[in-house]
Length: 639
Image (cartoon, rainbow, N blue to C red):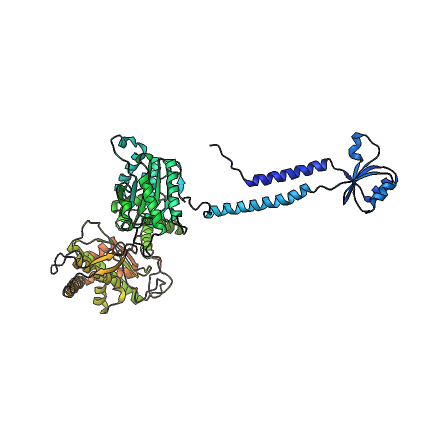
């Protein structure tokens, strides 16, 4: 493509300098010989001067004799010294005349050069300012980054784990490639598509995949880039964006974080008509203004659809809402395989096992998991990323780095071992519970130990499953009480989640036989803050008292259930705690050996030469409110 050159003031400055250089060269080529004033006086005495021209500071003359070919040799100049020069010239009968010295060129350059220098400096500063932030002439221009057809390399093959959303967006590609296929039958191409889902689920990636598949220009910007401190700027930017998009049609406009721009009008805390509302009004007008055959499709993404203005969501503007939810186990497996293609992976790596152990992970979380595993393998000078690297990466992502800065007491390690062992033993003797995958007493973050499960994703949670989860939650505290005849603050997280689960069973899910299938209490959320600020009390004091009694009854039954299981299986609890004290981390095969009554073997990566943890081992520190607080389901907050 032919490159077009733009006019620049620097070209003018370069031309001035070229003229000056040429002028100097020409002057030097036809220069007049300069002589001393004493030689000039000698020429006068010898009657060799025919005529002179006198200026205020200089004398220019011509010697007598010589033809035209020697004219240059006959010319001379000298500096004027004698103020009474006229009398001297009359004495020697020399023709002379006065001449005013021209200073036009010198004066012109003394004005032009500084002007051009200042103009050049001003243009340079303005160019730099426009590169960082718009100048006063560009406030009304939109900040969208335009990707051409060849610049967007993302396709639907790069998107995994959101099959339903991808299938729905593939229709948009058909709208852009073959619009007549739909318009001939009287159909209208959707004007707007809203991608709704939690952060990190791939909404932006899906929008880029649509542009990459359809091979059309792609405008990308954030909703926050429209609003400025100056009134009317946001509306002007919306107009400019759609003007450019119509010129590039067919094309796609992608506005990320639409909630920054499209919050419901009239509910601003300060009241009045603010700049954001003007910008939103202009967006509504533009979405109504362009016709279906213009080939401009607006795709937006948000994780807060509840705060959007209803006028945005009506048919004719955002015709479709595509939910991009968290990936299920199959989706997580596909996402892991996509990201694992970038790294050499060992044969022992099982994406399905990793997918089972990462419920609640988004696509961004899984990408981070694979990246952390690759970094760990590189630190260990490995040629391939192994399963142990992925497992440790998962621990790091969930709980943080392993703490190695302080010494942990042997008593604290023992309490942690029995606490985590209590969770696992109770889980193994209850039906409808998830499989225990790994137990560790290596302290990370604020947790001194953790029991990992491989939860099965279910559409529904049944009452017996929830009661089993409550018993598992109290397994750690009960184990401390049985073995040490004392209890610590380490079960604070278990108690918090168990209490929340029991309260939901009674007040939200109607799982209490005593109180029946009723919902007690409803929350009212403030649209801008997005969190509960008030709670409407719709129960009597007597009913509230019954709710508290029922919650306490459920908790007590679960606590007793866990205690009965541990007291009947103390041998397995001791064996599991001993294995944790020795190896610090045990996997599912070792847990199976313990439950079968066999002593567990060492882990696959166990190093006999490595020192065992003890009173002198520099493991992570443990404080009263941290040890042995555990997260006993896959992600934090699942149990």
